[in-house]
Image 1 (cartoon, rainbow, N blue to C red):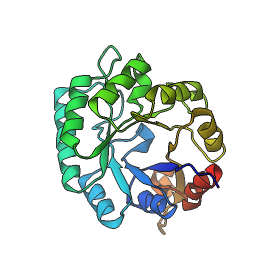
Image 2 (image 1 turned 180 degrees about the vertical axis):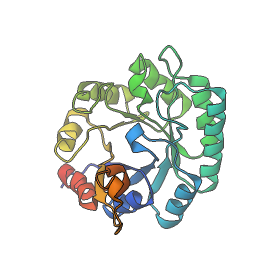
Image 3 (image 1 turned 180 degrees about the horizontal axis):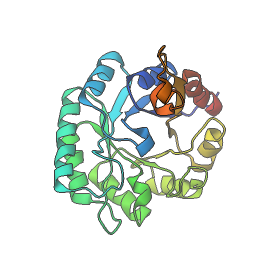
Image 4 (image 1 turned 90 degrees about the vertical axis):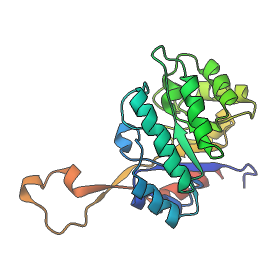
Length: 245
């Protein structure tokens, strides 16, 4: 048995996938809407229902839309309001990510969000993977008090970005947690843990399940959007931890 304490975070897209992730033993939930767009802010009702139903650590993402991470003043105001609401609901933390036009971290507004969330924890998400200088960004995020950075090593998947993830983890020197995510599965999690020295891991384990609808409209019989739902297999969550052990 490995004596390291590994943390498994699962990105979920609704109440049902959150329930499956919790059933599978997830240590923490990144609660999102629209995972196909990389995750956007979940609704108040979804967060409230999940908070009331599950004792697991709950971190909603604060992202008012898909697309880039360059936000208007109006979008920033929305982010502040969502943090306030989720703080009142008793969430354990939030997930943020803001950039400037030049690819640097938006330090002033990110700092405002961290301060608004306090004493909740703050994860800086994969906006980090689009920043121009990851080592400068690392120091800035440490300085502003972020708990962790979710990263694929500035490449599409953790397998491709593993070298940078390992270097970031060395530079972090336990001042901030480096959490690999994107393309992380049971087949590569052990290798990644050994290569990078990281102890927290993020995966969405996205799957689809057939709808329970009895009536299938013939005009939409072939529509996956109409008759399949997002799903997570609890056994896949258990398999991630088993692969580490």
